[in-house]
Image 1 (cartoon, rainbow, N blue to C red):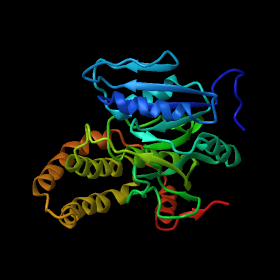
Image 2 (image 1 turned 60 degrees about the vertical axis):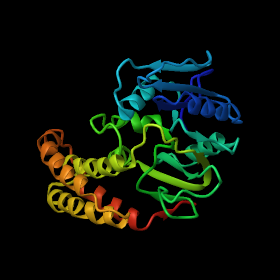
Image 3 (image 1 turned 90 degrees about the vertical axis):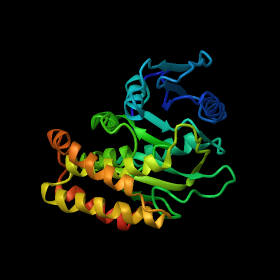
Length: 295
């Protein structure tokens, strides 16, 4: 059980945003409808082109220079006062007014979990094709997605937050490796659900797919045990064009860019190298293949 200072928030909501003030206001309206009211809302505006204002009950931080989602989220984490941090994208909505209560109840019941993820739905109420795990039951799994996750402050601050050099794409997976290595588990509960509007502003899906693979390779270089580095790196480089072809068009430009970017990042990634334990990676791979039900 986390100790809470009297009159302090139980949950700090942290959301980083840029050029989406209407999405942010929809998120805040949704949070205000939650049955759990002992919260603080922290919005980090990562250098929007046009500054915006929010009401006085929201802690708004504005960056004059764009630092990227990872650094902006860490900024919110450092400002958070509560033992639990709800990290969420600015374009989600919570149809369940009891969502925060249910998340906190799970966190209190299962103190070994450093992160608890939820399922995301389209605005039409259909499940998105990509979820933290393919399951209909609550499980211990490998990763959370940053669109909405309850983080135990002790856990996320203890491992250093997001890797700010990644900026965007694969940052949850990289943080997940460090959480697992520090002894924390990650939960996914598909009965807890949010609507994810996937605001298209600032999203370039071709660029995202390229960055996701590059940052996966950088994570391999920084975190994997040494004997895993070469085969896993080559595997990512080989699989990328195959995956792009399966999506309908071979991304040759992206493939060439990925090889060049990988060569550029080898030395900086190795300099920042702090490898996880081999046992952590083995357990991670087992959980990825077969998540473990949580009762």
